[in-house]
Image (cartoon, rainbow, N blue to C red):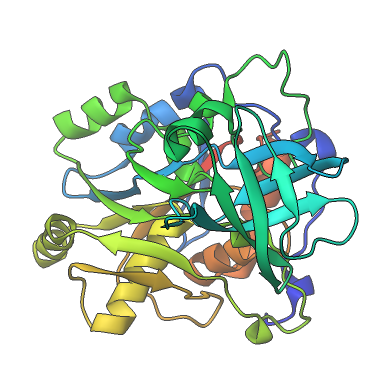
Amino acid sequence: MFLVSDYDYDLPPDRIAQQPVTQRDSSRLLRLDRARGGISHHRFYDLPDLLRPSDLLVVNNTRVVPARLEGIKETGGRAGALILDYPGVRTEKGVICRCMVKASGRLRPGTRFLFEDRLSASVVDAADGLYTLCFSCDGDFDQTLFAVGRTPLPPYITRNRDGAPCDDRTCYQTVYADRDGAVAAPTAGLHFTPNVLDRLAAKGISTAPVTLHVGHGTFLPVRVSDIRDHAMHSERFEVPAATAAAINATRRDGGRVVAVGTTVVRTLEYVARTCGEIRAFSGACDLFIYPGYNFQAIAAMITNFHLPRSTLLMLVSAFTGREKVLAAYEAAIQEKYRFYSYGDAMLIE
């Protein structure tokens, strides 16, 4: 269970969702009993009827920043940049950000890029395949970025955005997102609607937020054969005091903490391991969860269907059991579920 090949499966290309369903909560929901391996099929709008009144849903309120920029090198040739650490560091010379850069030719310190609306950037230095850029513009940097930047999408979404039936700035964002900083959406939360949240509240099922700003590392492949040798990327997080109190009260009263997405799982488990309990805490999370991990914070989770050989699939396998997860994935493929970021969801309890 420690070989990366143990987390492989065959997925027909047409099962990769290229856009969301028209109504978020009409996406499908596979319910998996992790103790027995039982499977049942639902719609996401059934969620309030599947959970218990004593449950607490913990959501990730990070907001995806339009951090992808397209432009040219000052010397000619197309160039693109993806800002990884918004809001960056503000200096007198400009806004310093760590970026992924795609451009022709060698990029030396001082190489300058020109983007839309008089936004420009110059290379400060480079390390480990990433670049430090200094951005400047005539007006406010944040307003300019949000005006001209594009929503970063996962590489497996290959459709042409022009003329697409959905606006990714809206669709690739949870309805409760309010903390700018992510370059990828916490996709398990994309299925929620105000109506579902209202019905959950009416049933007595509470929600509480944490923040983990999802980074580009969520899409990086595991490049080692033994997953125990993989170094996990680090992401900024915060657990508010009110959320910590709600989690501890829920557990004390015998309720379940239900994590909405792997980002919430990693955040809560990191705090539990680091502090010995759930409490208000912030920092950088680099926890890699794979089979053999002893869960301390969560009792159930909602998650999407993940890529083969991914750290996300390994996390779900650690919580549920690899064989049960892969069996559920095979059932989902047979039932023509939609996979990955804009795809369907699972409730594992």
